[in-house]
Length: 236
Image (cartoon, rainbow, N blue to C red; front, side):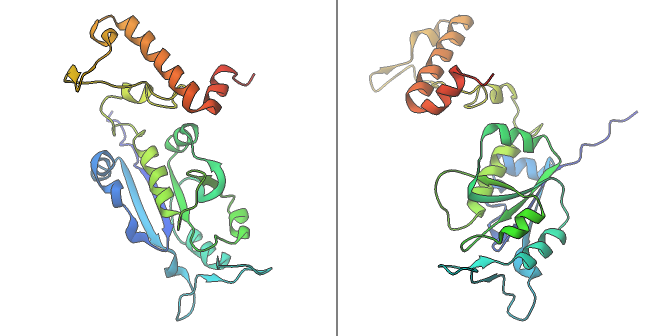
């Protein structure tokens, strides 16, 4: 019996600037995987769901304040009118910090529908109605959710089966074991008076693994004390 073809992992992006996609996701590993059908991308213009001649997607906030807010009726029409599997993810600085655990979780599903906000954000009611997962790419503010969506999708796509040739490369990356990654070296062996650490030339795999682990631990301890605390004091 022939094995059934795997359905492509599907990214559905709702944006006022769909032309920003695939952008960098159309290049390198992600782009090749897109061409090979490992994943698919549908970028949809939210403005196409706005009523009236002017296609207005935003309005002034209740309670006053600067800026404009994206309307719930327009967003709801875009969400309901655009098919696509997986949870709705809204990119926002106030959301859960994007980390490797969440990336793995989303990569394991059938896909994701990403809502990219603009202006001051979106009406909370539409997020509540669709049980959106609010996700932040970091503690900074962007002009819109699109760059953050590109970051998240890139992180997800590279975990999909068949995207990266050597899957063992994924295992040793930063965050997979709760640590930052160890340093890397390649030819030439001597460069600008700087030498490759002797242990990496030894051919002794156990010693190399131990050295890499010590390096990862030391780098994490110095640069990311928050990760180091979680690594040394895991939740019981």
